[in-house]
Length: 433
Image (tube, rainbow, N blue to C red; front, side):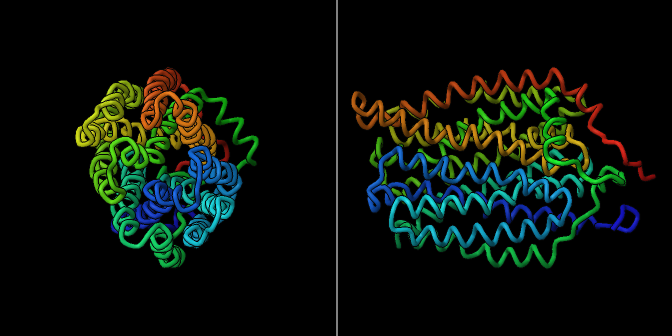
């Protein structure tokens, strides 16, 4: 199929965006529902905080990040539709099997396999969005797709909390995994693959470069390096909070699991969704003034969010601690649409899936592995002197330090964006008039 023969109506493009949003929602719901289950899992399987940090961090993240790269390289050459459908079916089944785990080792193995499946979701999805939506529409489309993380976390905390309170953590995991098999069939039979470069009005004559040349070209761009590293430090904040906040509120403030899940759905997940959309809207407006202002937004929101983590984690009143979470949950995530759109913008047309995968690889190896694990280890280390307050202090250290570091890296990215955008078009393409 070529640019001249492929056509997609506005209605169908919205359908594609909605379907990919549903897939992304399941991706994050299945990934993070374990956070609300940790108090029960810890008790049932007799786990330490360090083991929990491994299950929520390295067990999922290492294979998720590493396998995303070859899968993305395949997505730059083969059907993105088939890759997404197969990946969704795999991680959904593995989520169900997590509910059958009887030991730390079994749960860790199944979490690894969930990560293997989810590795095939985001890179081909970003690539499809870039080929369905023109550059001027891309940040907003990425913001809508990014709502999947917020909606997934909302469902994980709210519905997951209710099911867990009524039926236990095992039934919750099976309930969350099962719908993905049906959605995988919908993706396989209804999603169409556009030609590469379709939304840019380009026809691509050459094959996608192999992984190493693609990596080398991307990493040579300062914008790519600093945006990804800035996103990694923000990711450490996000993954640490998603993994440990339920335990923090149950342990430090004595709240019940169902109550914590309901609160976090409205003070963490919904503000996260609002911040994602607001970030996309602000980035679209700021883009009218040049390529740097949207990246300034990424830096600014991290500086604003940093002091609010102290209020969340140090105030003695549980209601205040939950309500203060709304601010950093909304503000911090505004960097997401700009990050995704910028990475796709500086990548060559034939390396967009690989660019997304390399971004995910770096962010997850830093954020997904180090974030939850660092909090767990620090909490165990501080427990002797701080008791139940050790978890809150460990979270505070990670959140504030990483937010400030992220702001600095985003600022550095703004200094090279104009030059890097000039060299994002490969050879072997032609403009379609």
